[in-house]
Amino acid sequence: MIGAKSGFNDNGINWPDDSEGGYRVPYSVFMDENIYREEQKNIFRGPSWSFVALEAEIPNRGDFKSTFIGDVPVIVIRNGEGGVNVLVNRCAHRGAAVCRKLRGNTSYLECVYHSWAYDLDGNLTSVPFRRGMRGKGGMPSDFSMAEHGLKKIRVQIVNGLIFATFRSDTPDLEKYLGARMVGAIKRIFNREIEVLGDERQRIHGNWKLYAENVRDPYHASLLHLFHATFGLYRSTQVGSCVMDELGRHSLLVASQGTSSEDDDEDAYSDQRSFNSKFVLQDPSLLKGKRDFDDDISLVILSIFPNLVVQQISNTLAVRQIVTYSPNEFELVWTMFGYEDDDDEMRRIRIKQNNLIGPGGLISMEDGEAVELVNRAITHGSGDSSFIAMGGGKAESADHLITEGAIIGFWQHYRELMRI
Amino acid sequence: MKMTFESDAQLQAEISLLFSQYAACIDNDRLEKWPEFFVEQCFYKIQSRENHDRKLPISAMECDSKNMLVDRIVSLREANIFAEHMYRHIISIPLILSKSENEIATQTNYLVISTLQSGISHIFSAGRYQDRLVRIDGQLKFVERIVIFDTNSIRTQIVTPI
Ligand code: FES
Ligand SMILES: [Fe+2]
Image (cartoon, rainbow over all chains, first blue to last red; front, side):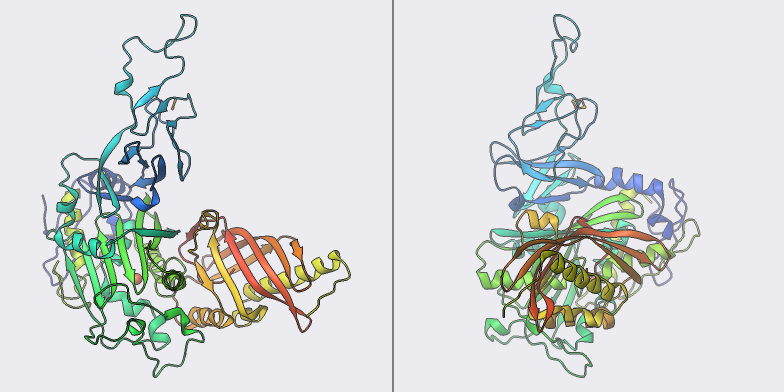
């Protein structure tokens, strides 16, 4: 309703003018409790697809995983027919969490509080003392089991990535993602994957600071100094940063930029140490192997609102954002390889995992960067950030010195939030 | 290489002392000395109990040589950006799981309390060590130190070894 111009809105957020050569984001939007509540309603329970699990995490009937969409607890479960259900993990009786385990396998779901039981599709199948005892008590005679199941929400799957939405009017998943993002997903999820493990990272900052971070190729060589410190350069590297039509998703890609068809072993080893004070004592860390039939060595695919898919050298992972409060979220990394990886390839992925995750030599800084912002910003001061690298517009770029995708995120965010 | 020990109690005291020295090395920020607690062909890993119990390989850190430990520390000092912090390790009495001529296997609980520049301390990590030790020139060293942490959700980032 206010669009790009400045002004106050229902939330009391004063969004500054963006007509002065750069885009501005008011810091209050990262701290405000009302904004957080509105985001839960308008984004996480709004017309968005949230990532909830990989199919590979629940391969068999009855396999489940509990997770969150925003701050709503959900169960992702494979039903008797082999399909996937996403159920709100909240008893239809008086609201207890039904599934109390992170993962497992079950043939039914039972709430421990009063033992209401549900099948894998969330249908209520039994209510103890429904007809009372010796003619006394019990549920009203018109109580309908069919109307008191677990809340089942819409599910769609693309190449093994399971997404869910609370809304019936969210466009179909592939349309929501857009052809380009679907292509990037299909490139990585081109065959059966094998989950190698999870890492969890609790970050004391607003989740949108992380959404900005993963849409920001500008910081990569400036904040993450591992490669530079050890003199590991890829002089031929080229990159791009593209968005979907609405600007909400972003795809950062970097390639070797070499056309040489040199052997697989060297695909990721054109890294030379020069002019550097420090040399890796054990360079086996960086040993890689060609994974794809292209030169792409880095993909950071950010899907609005809660998913990042990454390929960094031979590491493959999805990162899921789980929100807890305006100033706390969890980042859940699920690392994977392919089912047909041989031992050597598996070993390479596991070793390169030293580069990524909360202890990653080239990625650990992102958690701290988010917290650094969170520590310095204040609510209600009217202060804002200034985003102009690459032109200050939500535009795709054939280089990495841009912040365009961050603006794309915010434009879509404001539309959903009506601010 | 043959190892003889006068008694389990003596051995346990010796291992306890080693673990205290290891903790002091990290807590007192003498990280450059930390790799010296390991043999050349060592294995060091910090893994969540969640992955460990699922028998999945991913770890927060995994080094399969002493040189990799050295690289971790150089990276910490020269490259990585993180909130300034101090660790304080609290370590239980080691449990000797097995003892052969060449090697001792132990399990020990730890608690790492981290204190940030703000002066606020928090429990950064709770968990256990699973170790394999050998004696080299009279000195016990780690062939393997596996840190299995219960604190599955790592606060912000992990850069300093446990
Ligand atoms: S709250 Fe679940 S059965 Fe009562
Ligand atoms: Fe980063």
